[in-house]
Amino acid sequence: MFSRRHPYLFFLLTFTSIVAVATIGMSLLFVLGAKTSDFEFGEKVGVIEVNGIIADAKNVIQNLKHFREDNSIKAIVIRIDSPGGAVGPSQEIFREIRKTLSTKKVIASMGAIAASGGYYVAAGTDGIVANPGTITGSIGVIMGFTNYQELLQKIGLVPVVIKSGEFKDIGSPAREMTAKEKTILKDFAKKIHRQFIMDIVEGRKMDQDKVESLADGRIFTGEESKDLGLVDRLGNLEDAIEWAGRLGGIKGKISAVYAREKKLSLLKYLSELSKTEFSNRVFHSFLSAEYIYRPE
Image 1 (cartoon, rainbow, N blue to C red):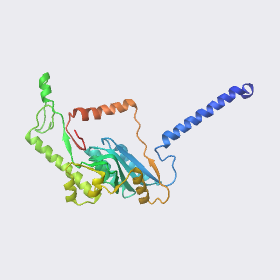
Image 2: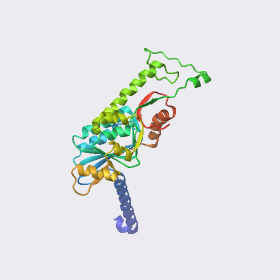
Image 3: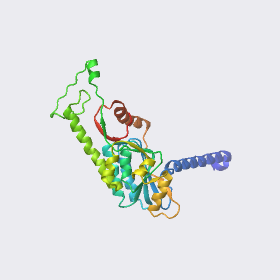
Image 4: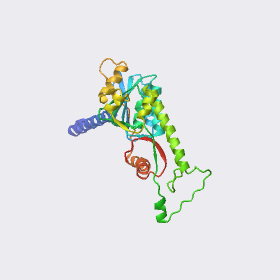
């Protein structure tokens, strides 16, 4: 047999195989187990992270549904570090949180910033925990674009637009906005602002007049927000997890497990970045309505 004829080589091969298998196993445990529920047992609190600009609600909605249907998850924490983002995705996450409340308790934990659309998301939960210095509030709508008219004239480009209606190219970056268009867009922003206010009234169970008095776009610290009724408690992520766990009926030690994050290749990441950040944050060439805190 090979092991008898070459005992040292056999030992070396066996030892190397064991080390390789152990290394791969530990790596898988670290990668897969660090932020998922796969290697946790017993009653747990699920943590879903909302980071950066809110541009797509799909992953958050999927994670909410997953935790909602997992019987080992007794409560959910939405960890928010976001200045807000697009109107639609912010509203989609809010709605999914509201659907989840009939099944499980959901607590919001605010990090460095949870403003505008970030606060919109938090307002849908059973309770909000913020740091004293968290930047939050910014309850409002912002619309904007970059006008290229003078630049186009200097380089000799003449835009040609054929449209079916007077307002079809409203917000065009190639010309000045008319008084009628400004009126239409202001009315549009007011309607979306009203939706924001009414969802806060519903989610936070606050007086409408009180919310309207705070919904002028200004930002608040977490400490101010608690005094104003926009936040329930001051504390960190661990405090939010503890609160959620107790509300969920966990008596002993509370284990927190994180929703799996969607992994993107470098090429895919740069592609997504070029389509969103580059166009929206640098050029602003298209008219958009956002629940976002953008101090520019």
